[in-house]
Length: 400
Ligand code: HEM
Image (spheres, rainbow, N blue to C red):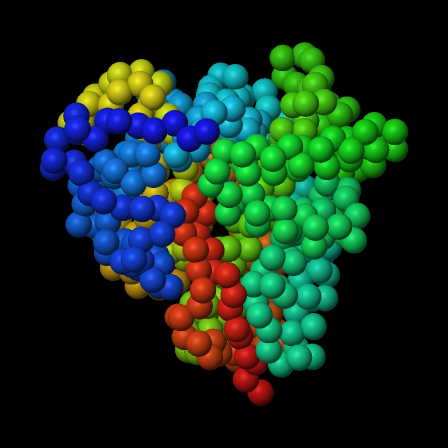
């Protein structure tokens, strides 16, 4: 059941701005530019009556101060509209200090050293996937490349069989599209069930994957994780590590397809590709994060009430003209870049280094064999917005 929020009548008019994060007619396929222009008309923190009523933070500074203030803005509930019995992902849905032992157990697996050790494998999968595109001379980048690539890496990291790739992809897509409590809960149970089966398998036959690591390593508070905690953590990795990379790569490659001069520049000097990656993560954030107000408090001149929901528009953090010059221009050579696409402490994305590595390697390997390509449809692809922002398809053609 959805819990409605009857706060609208108490909010001063100047803070009200109607915006439906799940679909607004003013936001088209040029999603980030459109959202940046639209929400620039609203106060940096505003209240929308849509989706049960909730606050929205759109400026870099407002978003940063909210995600760094767990005493007032908690992650215990992260569903808009609010639902009963929301799924619990570990450590995402734990405020400090409770989240710390769980972050600490995850971080060594995603730090630069182990990710660098994986580079050869990541490069191998990138080459395999891209070689299919070269043979066909074209692709639906979303279906054939940007989803397949991080999913393959995720399954290898977890020690899961590749033949379940399609099934996993469908599940994660359905989860992100679900809005009704019953759908979210059913899908969460389904994903948890799959993770539970894998955990039992790894208990019997340990390997060098993440699940076996979680089973065999004690938390910093001296105890092993319970099976249910490992399940919830695996579900977070499942949901957090695949769609995000896929969605960002699709926006980044659409941008590159529309900039032939940038393709030439990066092909001639691949050492510029990390700058392309950083600019892509600045310009094309794909995750918005809801928080729940934990106690009555005043911030930004606004009175928040316990139980209010706050949506942080992380994808707009890199589009704030007060922080970034010409934020709607894609410029790999900009001298300063600040963005919160991966959020910030205490929930700074654990997989950020892996995500950057994945996009860098994909771009390097792509440009080696496809130095010129176009996007026939320009910007007019199907897309969706919500807590996740995604292109649903992207037709790219190789230019011989
Ligand atoms: C483009 C790629 C990615 C983006 C944009 C992204 C974004 C984010 C964001 C915004 C958060 C904080 C969420 C919040 O506070 O509500 C987060 C947390 C997290 N991400 Fe990522 N992520 C990406 C890739 C990955 C990958 C590849 C992994 C690992 C396989 C990963 C694992 C995690 C984990 C475990 C957390 C929870 C951290 C915590 O709560 O302490 N992410 N990510």
